[in-house]
Length: 379
Image (cartoon, rainbow, N blue to C red; front, top):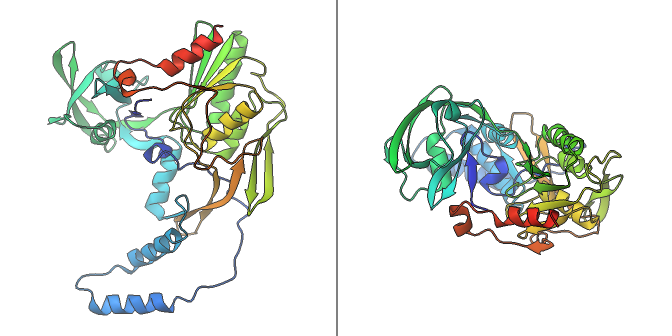
């Protein structure tokens, strides 16, 4: 799927496709051992004695903590200072500050407005789907990626940004005041009797929004459901468990193992409002972590088929530990396994039906994966 970002919102997982699967925040273990830091002190003394410049001791301490954690050699185990922790939390909850509320994607290899969110500056200013963004603040977007364009449009709440678009062959300028933009984690619609539920991330709101959409599908007697997890890099474990529970009745959703020993088994609840409704889950290489837990559980229990491309392959569990000064340690504490006992780390989950979405498809506005899901449910 072509990269699509919402100006003013980028799910934290979209930054690198994998961050965002968070285990329990409680049950912190205590290790009483210590490290011999004499060599670190010796390094500090030599640095202070010989460095031609100013040194900030707090920056040095943060750097030492970052280096210590990075030396564990695990991509997902990181030390975040106060500012980084705040940004991480905003990313996870879809709140990243000032933007205009326009979803930007590639069409014809150019950044293009895909849609505008309701009641946002972009919609009020008159931006329309299909507008090609050819300039931001009088800078031409030639050669810009979607991420480049989004980063230029975003800024502090209350400031303005000038956006030049090409519409029907004519350039148009819009000066838009940035506002705080929050994108919902769940979107839903019904097309030709098929309920389509798109999950952008798994956060504190996802359970309620997904269940509300599910109840709407049930009330309107949809004949099939498409759960779109493409580009969803993860989020909260509890949300993944609850979403899987929309289809599964008292079934194993995921198990966790530490050093090979099972430490936790999470099951679905007893109110699967979408049970036995034919379901297709759309996945791609951007579907990671919590998305893979849901996809793997529904696939293993044969509650849905998967269509699209192989998922990312993140099979580990992270815990957030508050270090007391605003900094946070995100540390890998376990590996997770699908109900059939598979750990998908680095290998991902293979779809039941492989359907690619090429750059040409994205540029032309085609979505063969979504169409394949609709065709399957119409049989």
